[in-house]
Length: 315
Image 1 (cartoon, rainbow, N blue to C red):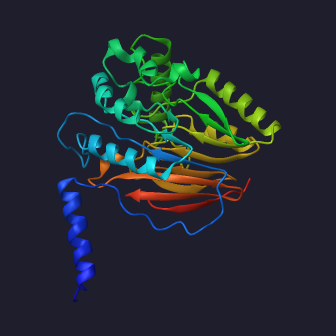
Image 2 (cartoon, rainbow, N blue to C red):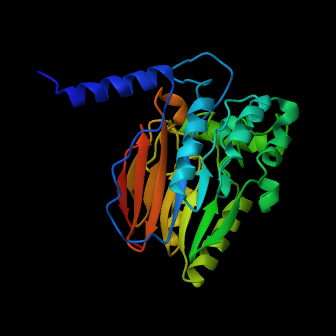
Image 3 (cartoon, helix red, strand yellow):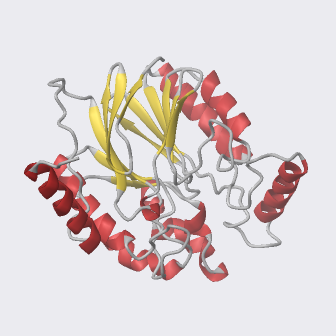
């Protein structure tokens, strides 16, 4: 097959750019709609930075340059806010130091979600993670919070509430995590993995109240969590079924957006769209997205390994 000169140059230019790390920002397809969205937001998942050599197709050091290019590109697209879906680092508290200043370069509000690697830090630093992410500044001293936006409700969950990695042995939370994990493994559950976590009773009660208040106010809700809940698999919350029941019982829940599963994916549940964003660490290219919210859909423009999709709103 003979390549036209333009096609040949495009292939050569793209390959050189990726190989040299010169430009990790792909050119998206043009958004041809003239309809103005209600709001828009950027999504980034699993940068998982560490000053470490590549392993298992994870390019830890390269997350710095990929994130820098991502911030620059998303700023140029001018979303209303950006959500960082967790696993910002790979597990060393000092790794926050080079990464957080890059996130500070966003020209729009940035909202952090707690991931399992974020809390898998040294024992003496586990209780410092939420403050290091600035979650205390939005009143999220326990890692979960909600915000209003143009008649919509944004709900951020903390899936490390009950977790082996977030808590120290001997604590009530650690022992609860051990019991839950042992029970799942005894049942042969696919999500019986130490890297997952669960939403605790207090947070679940808060979630129910928050969703009920949003429904009473006529708001639509988008829920963000590091861990998926649907479809069931190796990366879903330990109590995925229980959380899913709460979401499906509430009125107005449009979408549940997560990270954690680096492969990414999308599935439609009972009236709820479930989007998992591909992990930025697990590609030499990049992976992130811009979402535009419309009355009848969420339009997702993916960059790099993250595909573009249109998620219909059925609620």
